[in-house]
Image 1 (cartoon, rainbow, N blue to C red):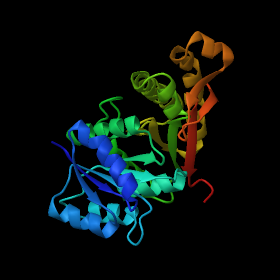
Image 2: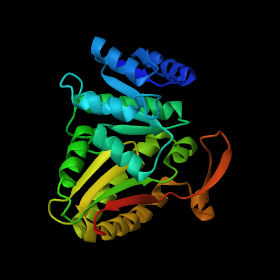
Image 3: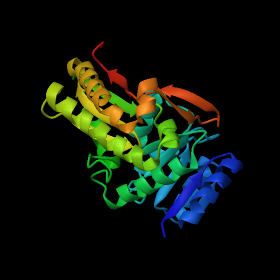
Image 4: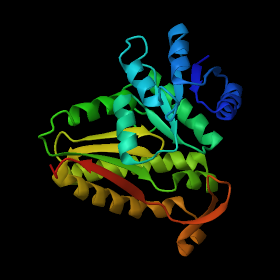
Length: 274
């Protein structure tokens, strides 16, 4: 039985997560602050940590940083729970040891899948079981190495599938997994065609990827991947949705919405301006 430590200063969130994951056979331990989280980690290290980013006092980033410095804990995957989705926040989280993110408010089915994915990554640390790409710890190590030399004109390209959560709601998680695999293929082809030898493609988790390339190649890679993805996306929608150019779903607030057919989105962080 896998052990999961849930850390959030909102007791309701902790209870929702516990009630979602316990029936899946996971043993849940709870903590309501960063300090309590480190105490629980010292008592009995879990197999996975669900960690709120915005904790009072010691925040989630500091908990993650301290875990990475402890040989007993630095192998444990961390899923950050946060409302922050800006590129800087994600980059900081990954550099501090986060393996995946889930944003509030979250879908419980998505939570289960992300937890399952990270526990699989723990067993197969070198690759994502879904895409075959480097994942988790390899992505973290690659970003750290790639950005170590400030003089090198390098870029980190964070990529995800826009409105992917709503797509899963409208179609299915099984279709969503196939879509993630096709997105990985588009990114890999784009990097082969437009990138450099030695560039890197990793699967962060869920529908999120990271590309490490040079600053001058980053936009070319992103544009080619976006074009390739647009070519395959009709396969994942019904004929009626293709004709309309949109699909109906439920957003994170439980409201009905109409959304355009999916695209890849890119957040490019580089040092070319310096």
